[in-house]
Length: 111
Image (cartoon, rainbow, N blue to C red; front, side, top):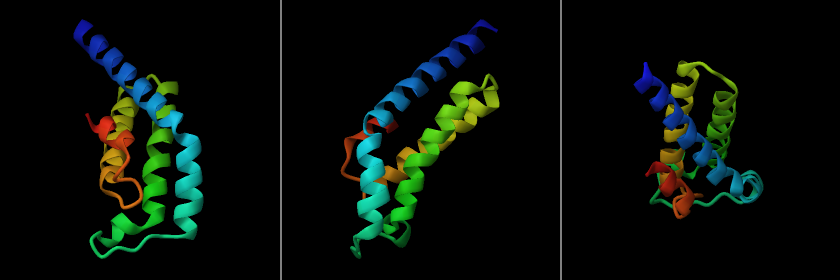
C-alpha cells in the first residue's frame, strides 16, 4: 500500500514537472506549430511522411498537454497511467519530427 502511494506521488511530481517544462514554451510552440509550420511546411526527403506532416507535430504537442491536465484533475490510477503513456509517445514523436527534432525540450522529457 505505502509503495503504491509513493509511486503514485512520484508519478504526479514527474508529470507536474513535465507539464511545467512544456507550458513554459507553449506560447512559442502553439505559434510555431499552429501558424508557421501549417502555413509553410518543410519538405525534406530525409524525413518519412509522418515526420514531415505539421499536423502530427501540433497534435503530438497538444494531446499530451491535454492528457496531463486531465490526469492532474483525476484520482484514477488508470487515467494517470494513460496520460504517462500519451506523454511519452508525444515526446518520442516530437524527438523525431521534422519541426521539433532539434529542440531540447522533448529530448529532456524523454530522460
